[in-house]
Length: 216
Ligand code: DX5
Ligand code: ZN
Image (cartoon, rainbow, N blue to C red):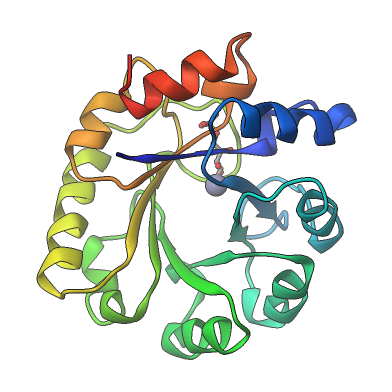
């Protein structure tokens, strides 16, 4: 059964604690937090202070997605703030192996993420040692964008890579996933589906989480 990670980017920040409780009660498996620096992506969002505040109100694992140019400078702060999974983008990491190793040394699970234009082959050498691969199915930066259909081929390719290398990495997909288009993403081999607007911009969190999961 796939796991669901609601992205708080589309939540009501003025009631963040309640929003997190609501998705927890509605069956979420992870809380996905999007960290943006206005440089790697054209938007600014949250930092370690919010991650730490979220940690205080949920027992779900925190899945922290760093869309920042120099993630290696902030690994310790995010792990201390409570990140259970800490994911960096391969596009900004000439020394990805070092960064992944450091995240694990700090005691968190290490994720690597690919933009839509980055080929799956960029992960070839790193897949056996990561805990999570995050395939972006929109260009990162904003919630509420449309799923890019060619992502399905990439998901299938990376599913094959993970299975062949005998790694235990979770395959997560992020961007434009909603109840009405999640089926093919699940069928392509995803383990975890991120959804922001497909959960928080609806009036039925439980129903949408369950439909994205494929239960109804
Ligand atoms: C986009 C973020 C996503 C975003 C997903 O840059 O990484 O996590 O919040 O939002 P939806 O599901 O609305 O596309
Ligand atoms: Zn994300």
